[in-house]
Image (tube, rainbow, N blue to C red; front, side, top):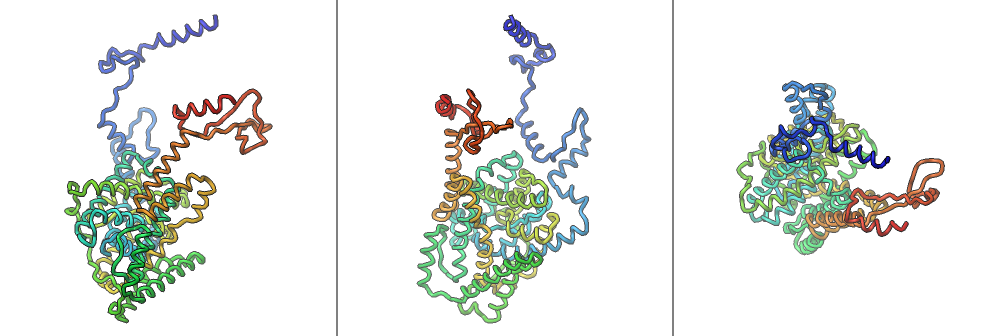
Length: 563
């Protein structure tokens, strides 16, 4: 009787709905539906909703039927797109003073690094300085990180040059090479904006922390080997990035006449920069010493070469550096040329790597300062920075860990420090480029070499080994792939092992038998806690996977049902 009454109750609940809920007579577009569901949104409405969510600030929802006035919605949207409108109202003179000092300190490090990274990207020195002007200005009004320093970085410079030079050799056709670089930068910016607008930040997560550690370590060694050309003053060198090709190029070049003056200058100033960095870490108040040491190295080495006429005795120098503000490169961007497909492929990789580095740097310092970084807004800000940069002779820019650390130590309070840095670089471009004529190439190599130890994180690799052997295999695969193959091969190996790990863990998930700790209601693994007591006549298990489906259902059933 009790069962039949329950069945009747269920039938009544299902067959006698309230008319207001299931009335479809007034909805011709839903006449065939059981429920009076709302009309699905159109493609246009979905796109508008996605874009609105990307720019809508957190906590801006309004409860009930109250709707904010149009001007309030516009103001909130503008503040979401340009965070400077929000924090600028409470900006103080004290913060401005701190940002000015941080920006000047940042410029003293950024100017020589930008010149060196342009050389790594197979571009003329001024293009590195251009990249330290426009992208930081755009990010300053759109970015949410208060400490991050935007500009060229070593890994992206290597990534860009190693892939673009496979399409066009910069030594044979430098104009077409620059055209492809600017096109890649434009497309990378478009991809980054798209990732942010459509909330595709999860794409960055496909590169795990272990993959990034291995990739950065391998790239650092490759970059260091590439600097042997400037450090030894070699005229001929390979365009390949793998360690075997570089080693062959070095040994073959040693048979040619070379001038030890380059090696002496490079090693001397490398020791000087590393020594100032050691002093800055030991005595926190002297952090500025390590920040200005690259600029001091450029000034002192340039003066020494000019005074001794060392360039006439085999010391390689920069020679001419074009002065003035960034020239327009709009006409150089080709979106329907013969290399557009190759540029798009390179742009996707550069966009992901640049975003991964920028967001990792920004979040690490945001955690120290106690605020949260919005990853999607960072993608949009970085994307617009690169789009604007590509139109003004810049290549792919992102957040630099070394310069961000200097910016943080110098007391930066907001993105105004990026504006001060960009203004300082612009002044240098306008008035001081002729002074760089006698700057030795060996000093640029030493500046790049001094920044590489921060990219090789041996301690973190050891931690990965202790925590997860499969993650260490991903790290090792990325490292060896970059070192003995290429940058693309290293990324491909890391992604392949990562997907293999996901598939294996999905097919054969770890299953833990649980027991209860005596005197509590807490259940935990009997393997980790042998004192835990199993429940008589009941087998309690925990399946360590979030992807429980038909792929692993048979494995779990056959293995654990007899238990």
